[in-house]
Amino acid sequence: MPMPPFPGRPNQPPRMRPRRAPAPQEEARQFESLRASLLFCPKCQTATPARERLLLVLPSGNLYEYLCAHCGTSTGSKTDGSQGDVRLVAP
Image 1 (tube, rainbow, N blue to C red):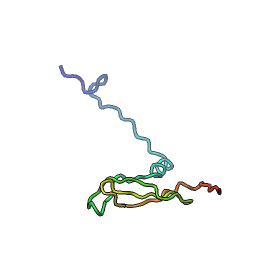
Image 2: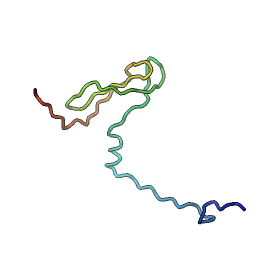
Image 3: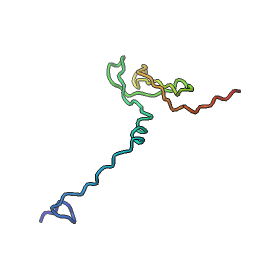
Image 4: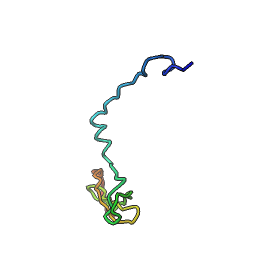
């Protein structure tokens, strides 16, 4: 004898809970620190995994460089603007 498709509730589809839409603040926060995983390398002529390297720490944010994981060629850069409250200390 075949088993019912959904135990406990034969011949009824499973109840799906509706998804809650994220608040606008949550949506914006999801993309604050976006990191590239694959970038086009001009030397390899294909999209390759990228490594992120910190170049400079600036008052306006950190400057990062993306390097090809295969050959080390620079494939791009980004500035992370989350350094609004950096305090410089004089020696």
